[in-house]
Amino acid sequence: MAAHRISDAVIRRLPGYYRYLRELEKIGITRISSQELGARMGLTASQIRQDINCFGTLGQQGYGYNVTELRSHIAGILGLGHKYKMVIAGAGNIGQAVAWYPGFSQRGFDPLAMFDVKPDLIGRVIRGVPVHNITELRPFLQEHPAEIGVVATPARVAQQVAQQMIEGGVRAIWNFAPLDLKVPPNVVANNVHLTDSLLVLTYRLHQMEQNEEAADANNPER
Image (cartoon, rainbow, N blue to C red; front, side, top):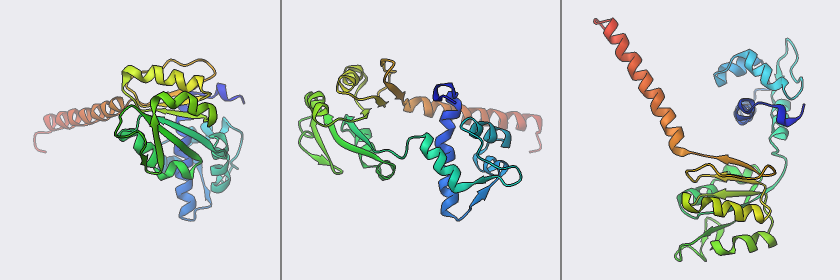
């Protein structure tokens, strides 16, 4: 089945499947049913089967899924068998966190360089990654091609920086700037809005508090 026919909701769940299956491997579990996997992930068994069947029939009725085979299959779907070169625009806290996080390198993501405008950062090597002047971004990409660009700049320059990355051959952009980037059809972008995620959390917290208040009002003896 062509990848573009898979829903965004299914694609967003794939990394979760991969993460849980890796954890199962680490504790020695070799086989798991859709019901057991769903219970761990907070999904129904039917949802698990529907998602996995989007990419071929892998489980066996009465047997479930081979954990290693399923994890390997999902890793292939996610493209984790490849090495990806990355450049990071913005050497502040977010940029440095991306460069430093060991889980990225373990999965094949290799940060080549960071770029910034601050004189006190340019020329430094931060967490093993050299920091260049942002004006060197496009020339750097011409000599050191990269598939992924990370935008961790202020919003006012994010689109301009992304355009330079695209002109330098970057095909995927991970954007932490607080705006949605505009990219051509042959480039993919994932806009990460940290505040939005926090507001989803506060919404759920607020709903819990309202439910508790309603329960207390309906049961004065609690």
